[in-house]
Image (cartoon, rainbow, N blue to C red; front, side):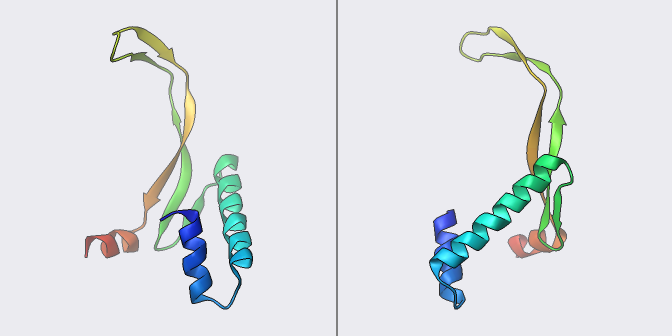
Length: 91
């Protein structure tokens, strides 16, 4: 599902316009992004949690050429599904 599909589905379910729903979705995504970037993360009970993990610097290998390359340390976003989401997906 794309963001536009989400906006359309929500607009059909609610008595709000697509523009109002799009503003709400954009606001939620911006707030989630800001919380993840700040390091506090986001936890939605029953759904899951969003956060960042640190990946240490390492020596990588180009699979085509076999050339070794230094890969810098970086932060990566991650999502950990909640128990209820896992149960719904598995049933």
